[in-house]
Image (cartoon, rainbow, N blue to C red; front, side, top):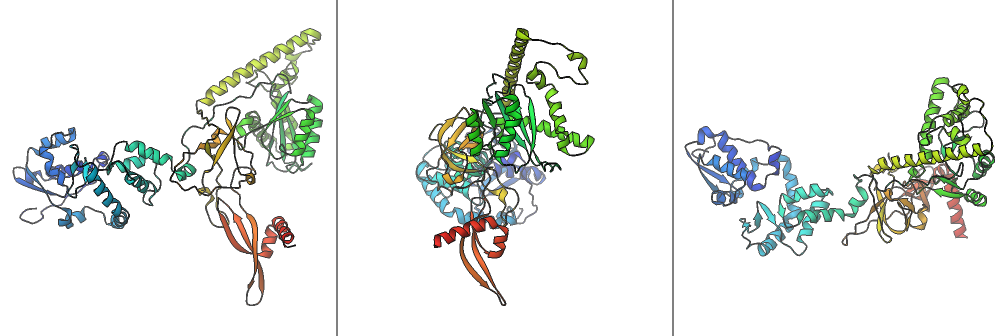
Amino acid sequence: MQEEKVIAYASRQLRKHEENYPTHDLEMAAVVFALKIWRSYLYGESVQVLTDHQSLKYLFTQADLNLRQRRWMEFIADYDVKIQYHPGKANVVADALSRRRAEVSVEKDLETLGRELKLKIATRIREGEGDNEEYHLAEDGTVLLQGRITVPEGGELREEILRMAHHSILSIHPGSTKMYKDIRRYYHWPGIKKAVARYVSQCQSCQQIKAEHQVPGGLLQSLPIPEWKWDSIAMDFITGLPIARARQNNTIWVIVDRLTKVTRLLPVRDTDKVEILADLYIKQIVRLHGVPTDIVSDRDPRFTAIFWRALQGALGTELHMSTAFHPETDGQTERTIRTLEDMLRLCILDWAGMWEEYLPFIEFSYNISYHSSIGMSPYEALYGRPCRTPLCWTEVGERRMFGPPMVEETMEKLQTIRANMKKAQDRQKKYADQNRREIVFTIGDWVYLKVSTQKGRDRFGKIGKLAVRFIGPYQVIGRVGEVAYRLDLPADMNLHPVFHVSMLRKHIRDPSAIELERVERLQPNLTYPEGPIRLGDRRVRKLKNREIPQIQVFWGRQNRQVITWEDEENFRKNYPEFYAAHSFMEQGEAL
């Protein structure tokens, strides 16, 4: 301004590094910027700078300056500058020009939310830190350190600042680093970074909602190497295949000898009952290879059935099932299934036809192929010599061996297989553990359980993908092996209570938190239950020309309960089994 008239305006956007400047340095940077762009007007003249930041006028007498401030002071020394304090309320026009129009509504919200807090801060800080030489007082008596408000120790003031910075609708649960960076721009107290980290780690909502960004927990635990052929087997199913024309099969039962890697492929239907599978198991596995000492499998309902357990108990076979929702336990079969699926695709691509026609050839091809973990083909590991094929007739020959030499060669091959498997397991563990971390819980700890969120929308229009990632907390009541734990789950959750450590997250308790509603039911695949839970009252909806019987339905989905009125006839058609069962229960209660 010159002679009370404005002759020029100037502004620019903050650079990336300037966004980290404290308020004091930002105000000083504005003065330096003005002197640079208007040098032609100001150099050699007496300049009066009006600012609403009172601490700037003490800059020339300040004893300790940082490098940036010293550089600025050398620049300002070329000018005849006098800085005077001018309150913002007396300079409304300039203050308004420095703000964006869109910020007004937000500032009003912030003012409403923080008015009471600011009064508390001003009073408490004047009482607690006013005599310290490192601090200086603002015009309203607030103690400042490098332009930041100093919050005294004691009381609930610091907790209230943390709560507003984390739980407010204007912040929405930021992470530890982001929240710390936001708070330290305006407030200061010793140990503020640790306080923010502690507060965020104890937030129950964050523990249940936010995804883990660390490597999975639980180091690789290799299964023991079997002592003899077909002593230990692994089994699983390949499902979802096209229905074959012969027996309407659409599933392959994969059974693998864990020592020799010999694989048997049995076509079945996904609707076959466990009695049919047991009969097939006796005829195709026990008849040819004997009774195994143990079976490794997942927790498929057919393997957890009472009949299957009773059969294996009578045969003297132990069942080793994976922990809930952790198929990596039976990694041997999972890897075999991926290879077999690729072979099926190639057969269909090259020769067309149905997959069941090629199953014997796929089994034969897989068993005569070299297997890196045992150093030979499964066929050779089982029978002691390579298989006769068009590729190796001359190599196999007519060599015969009987008596002790045959036994000696068999034992040597067995030792070679076991040694190769041990090397393969050590190699697998070495590489697997590079991307894993060790996690240990103690009995009595409380942990959250990871669940699978549903994708898409349910019948109420809610987005299932936005459900919580972890439910609980639940108490650890036992340790199973090295990397699995038994949880104290509600009985009606109908889940196997043993889980791999990668499915768990430690609960950090916040004494002031209100515990969220717990999930009491889950599907076997660790997804949220959906559909009708129970039926309620009945009513008749009267229209102009007819009456429609309706029934009250309690729906469950994504850790919530929704109640609707449905047309009884339509509901009976859509859920016939549920309707029949619950209608029968209601009639029984009425009797």
